[in-house]
Length: 202
Image (cartoon, rainbow, N blue to C red; front, side, top):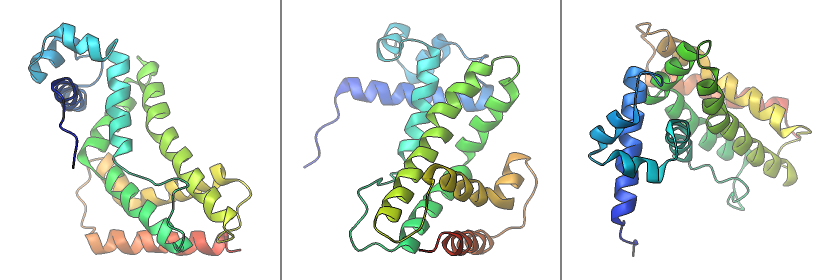
């Protein structure tokens, strides 16, 4: 039986949702804690009681998005194959990077990188860097089980994840109308997995 969500947890979730929407739509610098409180339907004091400052709130919003990936780390099923594990990572990661939220946050960080580099630093540490680490843990576990031959899991994770970005992500980033279908994206993803498995076959 699921534990009931407390009122405090509901408020925190509302604040995070409001912050994510506002940051995506208007950027980091333009948004105030007052605006976030109003959009969340709570007082500014409540926002500060959950998140000490705007930087912390931004980091929490990004971290929540990455948690949604639900990567298992070392807790892979005993019977899982290397291909199955990579497919799980690839599908979840592709959904994440092609989501409108992900694209908007990326644009926000790029647009503010020169004037407010702290925003980009927070995004990278709580977003991409965490995902890279989580995937490197999975690859290390697959190597430990003898399913892959990897000396540097972090380097291999970088290769795999950035290879997955592909043309679809580029179209999204630059707001280019794309005729790529879900089947095209799936085909590209599977080809990345095939290439990775050949490169790191035991």
